[in-house]
Image (cartoon, rainbow, N blue to C red; front, side, top):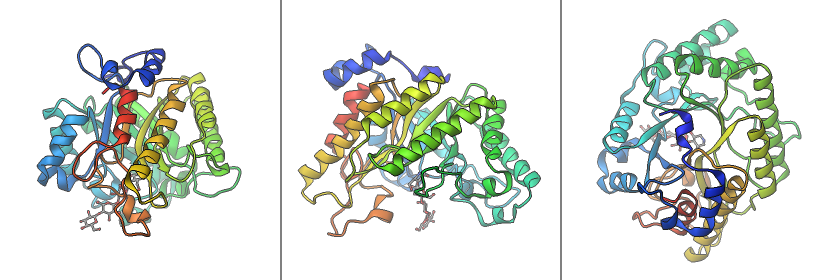
Length: 352
Ligand code: G3I
């Protein structure tokens, strides 16, 4: 599938969908106008049949919550363990879905042995070999890659720099170019994405991150480095408003450079939201609606993916457990797979 095939309708038609609702929005063939998908956890994919059914029912896209990360793929310098991504790809194929790839260059989830990489030449060689091997294996099968994940540092200063990593330490910003150029050379048809978080909220920090990301994209363009899209991870803090103008401006600035956008890891962090479920779910849905509306006011995202499908399997409580001991509810389906208002907010946009 070519990257442009992610886009099935015009922005104007999609805007109309926001107002018309889910059923009206489906295409004649019953396919959503914007592909929807979710991050998939490998364990339950193998042993939770209800989970598998929910994925099939709701998703046109899947992405591994892990499996393609260095820590999972690269037990040592000389080997690759493709069991998890192969399993997910087989599931996707069996059920008529596409699979996204996450991720090729990230500061986190790195195996111990990579700490021994220090020189620029060694880093370039390891990064290049990794990308050639992984993208090469799935060429034509994985149409969209988070090539570089979270390149921006997490500091709060006005000018957000590059995040520390094995790659940044040895190569500086050049690692971003190397990763993108290598991925492009191996699979020129794949959609190449830079993916980051903390871009969406109405805070100074998010504003600085948007500007830094835009600057990075401009520098890449000036250097002639291939890049197709920016991924909004969209782990939305439930207690913060979305900066709808700021998000729209970023999307417009990217569009003016012919850079697409997609939503890659949507969920709403609800640790400080009210305990009452109807109220909490409504706030969660409103954050999602605000974000998607801000993007759709400019262009159609090429895909929308949540980071997990059901509250049964989510990373959120690992970092953002609620003080009152109640379970987190960050995702579109409850822990028993019932759709929540967040799912309606998504389907109003996707037409799914
Ligand atoms: O595989 C081991 C398992 O053998 C062991 O029993 C278990 C005990 O805790 O840990 C398992 O590994 C965990 C792995 O997820 C699989 O569930 C790791 O400890 C844990 O660190 C890892 O966390 C993942 C994290 O990225 C780091 O890779 C989360 O599931 C995943 O949701 C999270 O995803 C990130 C995106 O990649 C990037 N954006 C932010 C997002 C959320 O943090």
